[in-house]
Amino acid sequence: MNRAEYWRGKRVLVTGGAGFLGSGLCHALGALGARVTALDAMLPGTGALEANLDGSGAPLVQADLRDADLAPLTRDLDVVFNMAAQTSHAGSMVDPFTDLAINGMAQLRLIAALREGSPRAAVVHASTRQFYGTPRYLPVDEAHPLAPPDANGISKLAGEQYWLQEHRIHGRPVMALRLTNCYGPRLRVRDARQTFLGIWFRRLLEGEPFEVWGGAQLRDLAYLDDVVAAFLAAAETPACAGIAFNLGGAAPVSLLDLARAAVAANGGGRFATREFPPDRAAIDIGSYHADDSAFRAATGWAPRVTLEDGLRRSLDWFRPRISVYL
Ligand SMILES: NC(=O)c1ccc[n+]([C@@H]2O[C@H](COP(=O)([O-])OP(=O)(O)OC[C@H]3O[C@@H](n4cnc5c(N)ncnc54)[C@H](O)[C@@H]3O)[C@@H](O)[C@H]2O)c1
Image (cartoon, rainbow, N blue to C red; front, side):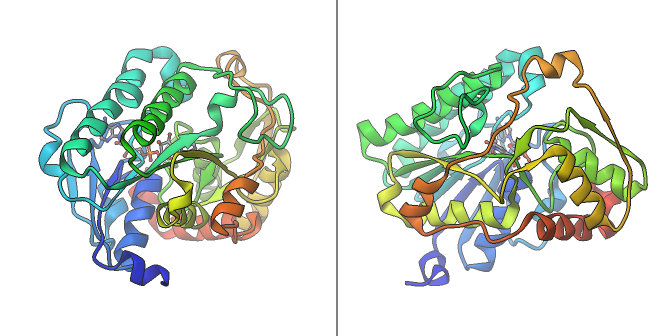
């Protein structure tokens, strides 16, 4: 069965659907003929933006997983892409209670609602590489020890484990993808709250210099289209159920080389290097790149977008729309 046949008519809920990755999924699912609804609390400081869903065909239901009546939103679903989260690392250290309420407690509410309304729906849960902490070896595979460096790493790990337990105890098909840094259209570029690349893009498009903290750290950035393809592939592959997979991106690159590539992709620009601010240095994980061979073997997925192409496509996408994102 091809991808469009698989998704046509499927009833899909995307939590965090107005955010960066969630809205990317809504666009792809809409194009594939799925009946997709975006659920989002539209929280300030996140990637949430109503305009992210323009043209996707997905209705937006504004609801907070922490306190909304989830029963009417979770009935008769085939697939849930669970993207809603508190994602700020620094923010989680300032307010770990809100971080845990969203990434832990609210996940339990969604789990309970789905048990009632959609006991057989598959769930693909957005997890993170963050809880490996500072890598002891590279590339990082799923057997790497866990050492969350911040409150967000702890809460995201708890959320992932609640979802995997749902597979073990109740047989729900649950797949978790531990994402590396992702980028692409609809990323939050107003500031660095979502990723440092957001503020780099903004500064480049405004003709201003951006800052590179450190510079030697390695990252394997994943482009939006590749991430979306991975989430679809996970949902389509029953053999992925019950497993947390790493998901990497393009070949690893140092932040300094990444900055140079971003300038080249923009056709010009400037940056300055500086030391990490102390509060960020305390929770920085250094170099990271994923060994995602298990996920590739299970699904046949592989990233298709090179770093150069992804940076150019991102900047080209934002250039005419930057005012909407500031
Ligand atoms: N973008 C990345 O590089 C990256 C890396 C690792 C993991 N992830 C994970 O991917 C997922 C999506 O991240 P993103 O980058 O698209 O972030 P994002 O901020 O753009 O999207 C998250 C969305 O969730 C919504 N949300 C938060 N709390 C909610 C609640 N209680 N109820 C309903 N909606 C709520 C926000 O309003 C926001 O729209 C998250 O789970 C994140 O932890 C992302």
